[in-house]
Image (cartoon, rainbow, N blue to C red; front, top):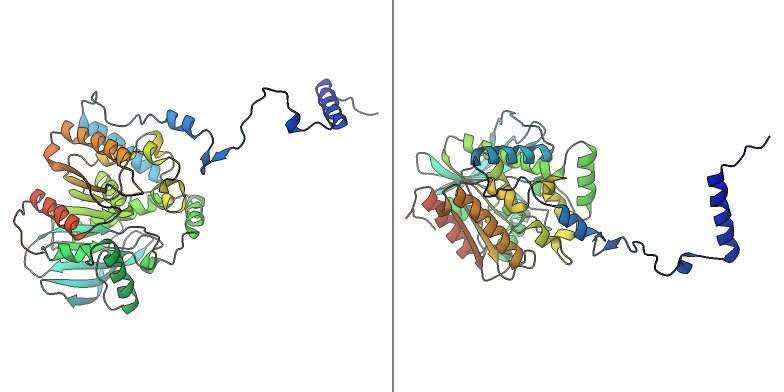
Length: 396
């Protein structure tokens, strides 16, 4: 015996039959009926404005915060949680492969255990002078250039192909000199490693970034979180070297490297100061049509899923307070508009002031674009010298 069709189903069937009989379609919808079409505008969901309105950054500093240390600890714990990483204490077990005399300092190629999963090759510059020295971890940029990573910051050894690429990058962004070598001439120990996908840890292409990011997630990790963990470990390795004064260890970066520098200063107790060039603005100021942040690809390198529900970019950087920190941005930088950059700078300045450390925090909007030229390098390194008690230190 045929089963009875529920009345609700009979009604649906009747409506469908009526529509088919009349040839009705979406264009024949009654006047005044509204629905979302299209659902994507400028690479964002059509309701992106509503999503922005939901972001209140509840863990950001505010004037009601009384216990600054407790606020900082809570924010740092949330960042660590959303990196999806486990802390790593693997012995470094470093081994020097080769070295080269560069006058007042020595350049070394070495390998060490960056994490329990990755043993990597690195470049290290060490002053010849006896004693313990200030140090800096140089964090390379993105730039869509993957054949070199650490070689963007330090002149490479024993590799003519990478040397040519490295020199071209220095000419394009750094006024023809390697930022790491310039700092080593001042008497700093300098370390640089490759992030996953760059240099020895490549090759990566722009198109492969999204797949790599998805595969990190499929494996219970994230691309950005892994990079954050590796940067923390690299800073710990640098601080462990016998030539390094652990009270004077800086993180320095340009572009994506700047993001890494202020993030590292917020997460690592080994880092005692930082320099960030050409990466800072408010999230809402970057999530606008035409922004580089909307392109995917490189954005995955700096995306911790869920973090912006708690903290804006300047809020994360503020977790580094009261450590000395200096920011530079170009007035004509197409990637970071002046307005959102100024807003971020003003937000961070209030946090350093709350710590009573306004004199340890500097921001500079300078003529120029997305670059780290020699004069900015000198200004940044002068800042570090002052903060590290080396005012008047020789060697440029």
